[in-house]
Length: 188
Image (tube, rainbow, N blue to C red; front, side, top):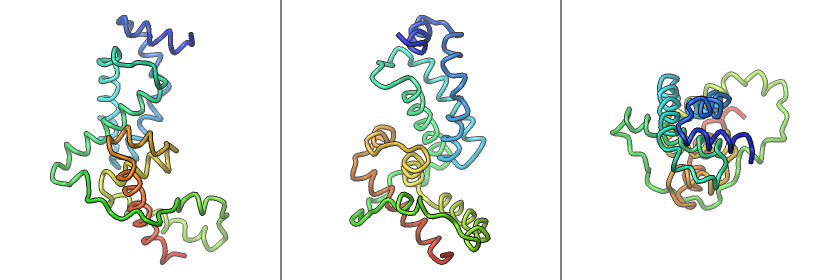
């Protein structure tokens, strides 16, 4: 039995100190993913607080199939998405599915390229364009993109977190990459 397993067991019995120790090193990574999804520091803070409260309330539902950190991460992503839904009820969360034929992992294809002097000089503009495009994406596109390319989650994990099927997940990621590619192409 690991230390985390012991703490989960104690926390299930109502030991708040055991729960605090379980989550104390996780708040920064949880905030980081919530901030990437919500694009708003206040909403990200609210999402993390809600996630920790939900984790405490539903600790009895934790079945141990995933490790505790993964479970807590999923709760946080869902809380961030809920914050976005609350803030923008008019925006359609699940956009009409686009065509994912020919989708490629754009970031992976360019990960090994080292920037030259011209690219370094244009880095500020690239950052601004990426930020603009992330803000223009639907919640689903941004969440799927962040989970895949910032958090490194598998398609199956993303599907579980966002409660969508693999096809919809691939399409959301493809649309996000296509939007980023379109914005960055003129800067090449």
